[in-house]
Structures are given as structure tokens and as C-alpha cells.
Length: 613
Image (cartoon, rainbow, N blue to C red; front, side, top):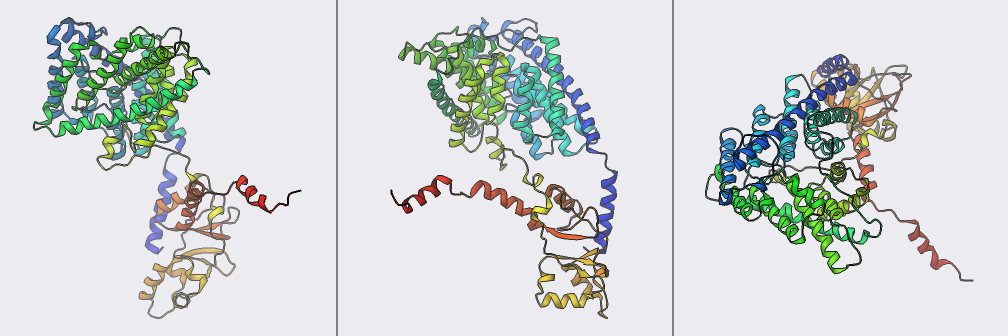
């Protein structure tokens, strides 16, 4: 590091000391998260009422905001036309407003995090809920959760853009808005937090977890005040039959896994088919809405959000014929509508179709094995969480979600079992999820697994090079160059070499680049290595985490750090370079990839050598 580099190090150190402590930043983000949570709660309530307004207007020709099911309409054949009106409006909004309103919301929020440093345009926060309310209010088979997640995320992003924040803090605020939106929509604060962690943040840190909980809690409090405190779906007494029904839950898990794979592939196949149409994408939502209208005319339960139908399925009020009809035609309606690029949420319709799948499965088993008496409502609830959990690769979220919307603790064991089996099946047959496939097609690879950073688990003393030689401060540059030419191990071992004074105290560091530049300037051959190098050091300590040491390297744009004693900073203990950082990664790689012989195998090898008695 030459003299010019040393100036930049000093400036960087001054800036680091001037930065506010992390605790203050977390407090600021938490305060902002509280405001975002309250705002998201009122936005969710407004969207809920807006959907009711459009549903009443288009299907019942009245001005009211109460939430009425579109399946109860008396429009007759005109029901085919009503969704088309909504499709035309949404298509025009996407063309002249923003195409970010297309889709079900969560991939768009993920894209903002990954590509745009968590920045979302203000018009998305306005047009997304409006377009979703129009699409759902005209019969779209969607839920409100995706749009409100994207809208809440947009509000969080806008707050993060209005004040001075880092990109990481803005990501947390975006996630707070998304979590608050889901919590306020479904009255599920825990699932809202976990959803944000699994699908948006991919981290579990105090800096994000605390603001997330605050935002989600306050958004739920708004929901409780405005919409009441009961569960989303009131489920009667349900018999989950654990442990006797475990074999059937295992079979249901496999079925749910393949259903998740099939649905994900079908959705993007439909999108591909729309892209091949010889018409502008402005009209795709109207074309998809026409298909929806035809389906809705024959099976009215596919129209709208369908919370009432989900409740009927969970309480075992539908016949198996109707369950099959709902499962098949709700799925078709969702595929053709959402695949056309309109605006709407994916969660509620998939809940309905998968709940019908679980109920029909239980009824089928009861028909084949009358003595088992499986509860269709129990299997409907379990399938409801498992299919979407597997499709989205957010199994933990939807285990908790399905529990929170019913408040039945007895559902937890079968939910856990069926959901993880379905998730495993989905992982075997698809590389992406229903959330990340769209992003993968744009060249983005989403790593949805998260784990503790190995650099935050290993200290410098574990990977540093202890065999380090320091050069005398009065050694000339020519002498060092000669030692490099002679391949002296003491000077060719690393790219930089520590410098020590007569007492052996660390006083500087010189790089090979410094030596070459000094040779060009030193015509008399008298320049010392201390003059050629830098005496303004950035150092690390044996008990410091590699994460902290790597942060120093990145901050000051250097590739190596002398390791010194905390008690005596002049005492050189070792050398940490990039290879030392990578050594920790290599150790983690070996732990995950290298097979080690088990004790059973070693015992089997010894067995032939033993003499029988």
C-alpha cells in the first residue's frame, strides 16, 4: 500500500468513527417500521373495502363496501362479460401506468430487492391495490394478499427512500411493509414475519427481526380494531387422527408435492402461451378474463376471493362432486387469469383448490376404507398449507400460516409432516419455486436457503499465517528486490511484507507493487522499505472474527492485514490474506461435501481380522 493509499485509509477511518452506532440505526429503522405497520394496516383495510365496493357495483349493481361473495350474483349470462371489463381496465392501467401491477405481487417485491436496491416507484403503491381491487371486484379468482404485500412493500420502500438509509435498511423497511400487509390482511402476525424472512430478506438478524415484529404487530392491531379479532376462517371441531392417520398424511404429502410442481409448471406454461398470441399484451388480461367468465358461469364458486367457499371446505359442507369441481375449475380459472398478466394474489385461490384436494382425498379414502373415518376438514386444512408451502418453497411460513388462520393447535403435527414432504417432492422435481421462476427466466438465481455466515463463526487466529517474517525498517528497496529475485521464502510468501523497527515492533507494511514503484524512483538505491511502504496500518487481532477482518479489507480496499496483539499493537503475531478468508469457506465446503467413514464401516473392516473363539 503506497503513500497515496495510506491517505485513503486515514480518511476511511475518520468516516468509520463518525458513523452512528448500529444500535441507533436499528432504533431509527424500528420507529420507521412502526409507522409502516400502522399505514399497512389501514391500507389493507382500505383494499378490503375497495374490493367489496367493486364487487357490489359490478355483480349486484349497488354502492356498498361490505364483503359479498360474487358467486351469489344473479347476472346470468352477463357474468361472462363482467370479468372482461376488469381485464380491459387492468390492461390499460398496465400500459399507461406501470407494468409492475401485473402478477401476484411477491416476485415483483423480490425483484425490487434484488435488482433495484429495494427501490419501488410511488405509482406502484397506488396502482397495484387499485388494479387488484378492480380485477377481484369484477370476478377475478384472486386473493388480496399478494397485492397488499407488494403495496405494503412499496410503502416501506418509499419511506426508505424519503429518509437517509442504506440499501440494507431499505430492504428491511420494504420487508416490514410486506409483512405488515400480510398480517393486516389475514390477522396472521407470526406468518407475516416469517414470510418476509423466507421470501424477501433471506436472513435472520436482530436488525431485521425486531422491526419486522414491530410492523407486523401494529398492522395486526389495526386489523383487530377495524375488522375484529376472530380467525380468518372459523373451523368447527376437527379430528386430525394423529397418530392413526399418519400413513394417509404421508400419502397426502406426496400428492400435495406433485400438485405444487404441476401447478407451478402450468402457470408459467400458460404465461408462455399468452406471449405467443398475435395481440398486444394490453389485451391479454381481457382474454384471460373471458375464459374466467365462461368458467364462472358454470361454476360460480370460482369467482372472486372465495373466502366463504374455503370456510365451507374446511367445515366439510361440500359434497365430493363439488369439491372436485372447485379443485379443477378454480385452478383453471386462476391459471388462465393470472397467466394473462392481470393483477391479483395467488394465495387465496391456491388455498381453495388445495383445500378441495385434501377434502376430496379424505372422502376417497373413506370410500375405499370405510372403517378409517378420515375427517375431510382436517385433510383440507393440511393440504391448504402444504401445496402453497411447497410451491413457494416457504414451508415454515405456511405451516404457521395455516395454523394462525384457524387457531387449531391440533393441526400443527400433520401440517408439519405433510408440508415438509410436499416441499421435498417439489425440491426434487423443480429448481425454482412459483415465486422465483419468473426471476430465473430473467437471469436471476435466487438462493432461498440461508445459514449462518462461516466468517462470523471463525476467528482470525484459526486461519492466519503464523510463520511471518518482518523486514527491518532500514533495509533498502534494492536489497528486498534482490531477495525477491532469489526467491527468499521470507519475502515471496505473501504479496505484502510487514516492516519492523530495531526493537522488533511493527511499524509499517510494504507490497510488491510498492517495491516496483520505488525501484523506478530510487535512482541512487538508498530508499528504505519503510519509505517505500506505508506506516499507517490497518490491522486485525487474533480474537477478531473473520467477518470483521474481511470488512476492513473491503472498506480500505486492501488484500492483507497484519495480525497484532491487542495488549501490544506493535507485536506482530501473524498475517491474514485473502487465502486466510477463503480457508474458512473451504472448511465449510469440506464439512458439507467430503464424506467421512463412519464407525460402523471401521468396525466392519476390523471384523475379518478377529480370530473366532
